[in-house]
Image (cartoon, rainbow, N blue to C red):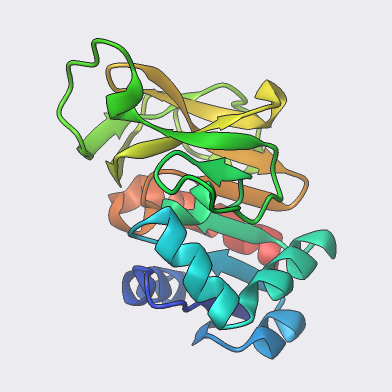
Length: 206
């Protein structure tokens, strides 16, 4: 069973429907105990970093998420779910993230002379920095995926980055560590390419 973490800020139904379409058992939950018994965990998210961390704390989910990752369960962070894995975000100064990955989250508008529209909404090319990474099986370099975000992660360790994107600046749009996977784009909204990525995650979760 794949547990979809519900803290009131995720695109849960779309992710659930995509996983179910692929034949996976996907259960939406806000119960920490469900994460403990799940075979895999998905952390979606849309919204602000600080508000998301507050809701995770209030629901008692922060420890459950960290524990699932420590146990080596297949884990997928999506959009804000990727950003929350890092230590901090300039969107919410003073708010600590999950801290599973070293690094910070910064905004496009903080880049000097940034000329693109913010937020970054729409289809952009996925540039695979680790083409043999399991989540990219059957996904060609340059494939289009769908983004909706104003902030992006800057991992302290460049080796964590499995894909980049160009949007006025080159930024990390996918990171991984062992069975932890996280993407800044929305695979559930990325047509056949997104389904292939989710299919690859389901293989890791099986």
